Length: 156
Image (cartoon, rainbow, N blue to C red; front, side, top):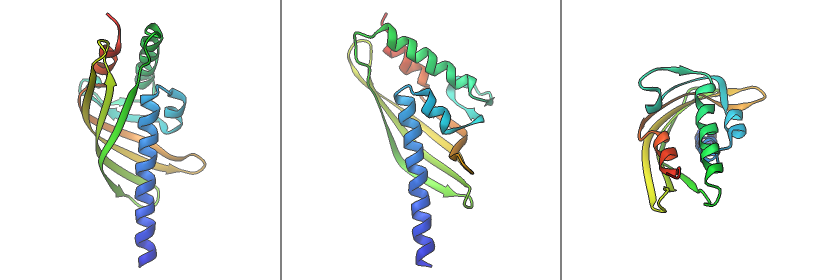
């Protein structure tokens, strides 16, 4: 019985770790790392989707590309984004599925040099796939849209 308890704790820690890796990829604008952690047909509900269910990676790619071009246009400033995952709650669904719910705090410096923080509530569904490890198959986010951070970072 004690072995099973350790396995559950280890599995939950793995889900927290892979979720933090995904958030770090977003913060670093690293689409390649982000895409490796996501199923190509991932679905999402986010403030940016305006209540619509989106399927696939093209929707997300747009924000990476837009954010990267914004960063390039303001190369004189070092853009820093830091993401903190708060109060993660992991539900295991067998050995190949998991759901994590948490609060996401995103800290950044806006175009005026002011430190800002945005908060969102997220739920991610993960599925373990042979050969690829854990993949995000669905995300639901509410709270501040990420696009607000992009517009705050852009120079006037």
